[in-house]
Amino acid sequence: MWDIFLVVGIGFFIGYKGLIKEKGIKLNSKLQTVWLMLLIFCMGVSIGRNGDIVKNLPILGGKAVLFAVMTAVFSTIVVYILSNLFLEKEGRK
Image (cartoon, rainbow, N blue to C red; front, side, top):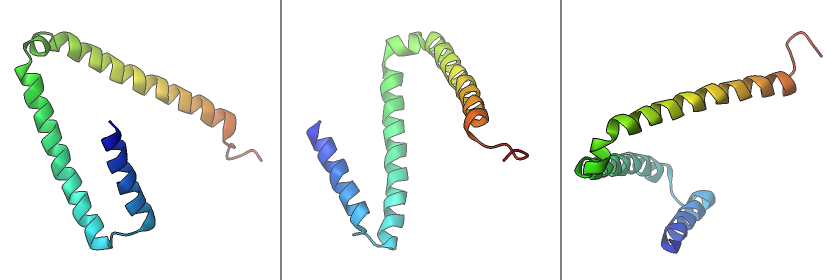
């Protein structure tokens, strides 16, 4: 676990100090996309090979949709309430 923190810390330090030029940053962005797609593919393979997950996919999918919808609804409600409390109205000063 510490090796992950070390690698992230080194990356943060390099980014913070600006040790990589613009060309390297563009290459890094493309590499991130490639590795992310590979990670998602590997996760899909692992899920597909796990019989328990495939068998329970309708139940898990329903729970995931419910969780996503509830998160979006309550986030919107909280943002609306906080906006009304802390942001100035156009007509008021």
